[in-house]
Image (cartoon, rainbow, N blue to C red; front, side, top):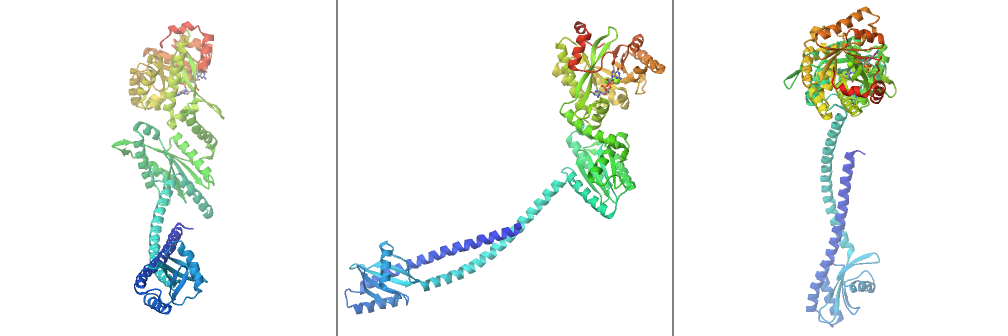
Length: 633
Ligand code: C2E
Ligand code: MG
Ligand code: MG
């Protein structure tokens, strides 16, 4: 039953019930008051009789007198009785019943000390009232048939109740109608609000994932029926996490709002935009093929090119768009969503702005999507472990430092190399968190080794994304302070290519880092196509020659020449030169001849877990040697 009917029926029910109760109470009150009236009347008669009736008189005269009084003061059918000691002396009026039966019945009633009441005899009801005559112990009894009275009362009541009832009912119906209309309007509004909230994104007001899925299903059915095509676009903002982290969530929220406005402006009326969460948006383009989808994608990219002005700060945020087409790529919502996602990552990776799903990329991308998902969890749950690879000083061939290298053992896919997951962490904006985890773990391990007699420096790889974090210096200082760790025992490695991408910004950050007293090294040197003299401007202490040159230097003359010149130039510029990727003795000998400063490679040891490293040190080195080698070269 609808709420409106329910309320209406309950109000009506309550009204009718109230009317019945009211009627009953009124009836009782009226009958009660009729008894009271009779008693008062009898008392009045009493006085009249006491004054005028002198008993014992002639019975006939008395009866006539009594009858006169009855007629004068009472109703035509009433009966007046004078009795003494239960003996009827006089009767005035014509009782319908046997008078002795009445009086017997009455006797019981007025021995209960009542002065009036009602008795039933042979289906006739009577009001009765008794009054003691002041003289000689006579009782004056009055009987009045109740039927007429009751009828009168009932008809009066009926009329009054009916008219009052109708008025009340009418009012009640109106009140309940007004009430139900108001309540149902409010409920409808609330329902609409809740529905809207459940299906829309609070921040931007766009549809959310649930509504998008509904619309996608609807569009699929419609397109199947009408043999039409459509496109699904997934959009992810580049660098959003970074903006959010550096400029704050409120800033990020404002940016998302502006982005949603721009997206809305880029589409047609029949298209729909949804925010799937974070910086991910989706667009459905009904009756759109490849060309149409590309057109919209280009339009979106174009609108995003203009900087966003938020709180007087100008920010740039580009979008990567993945496109999946129906029916070309898939005919169900799950696969279309997945394919658009794959295409979106493809667009991100290739930095092309948008990409249309290419089935050939799929196997690779599905694994990638899965890894990205699991990587976030692994980092959040601190499940990335750290291995350490020894670095040896060339002069005495002793280990003085270890490089911390992240390792991820995936529960199902096995070991995932850092070459695969580090770029993912960078892309997902979680590399900073990972770097700080690695730094803390490595410092705490180093503190532990020191207690066991091995004083080792640690070298940490720092991603270019970390260099963009303005709070990096502060964070590192805090960690050093927390572990009471000597800054000069920490080395940060930054890849050459990362430095070359943004030399001026990186340069400033390196200056600040170096002021804390730590050491800086350029990693994978030789791959970034930079000239050493260019790097001269950077405040670094060491260069690590990329292992690709070292691995082949014995067999490849040009690699050999490159290694030789890097070492010479490095020395000229006062850098320490470190070689990584030494796998055999021959390479080591050649490097030593070239006056390399430090060495690292499988020839000495691969990267090992903290405990195994300690074992390795015990087996390969005299403990005391390390106590003397406190600082980096
Ligand atoms: P990288 O910093 O240049 O690290 C040296 C890589 O060379 C390591 O690979 C190491 O295992 C490998 N290596 C060392 N000696 C030899 C050798 O003799 N032969 C060969 N073939 N390889 C050798 P790994 O651990 O796979 O790391 C790869 C890269 O991933 C690292 O290159 C580094 O750029 C990055 N990476 C690792 N951990 C982290 C981290 O915690 N943070 C960041 N930002 N990057 C990391
Ligand atoms: Mg390194
Ligand atoms: Mg390297």
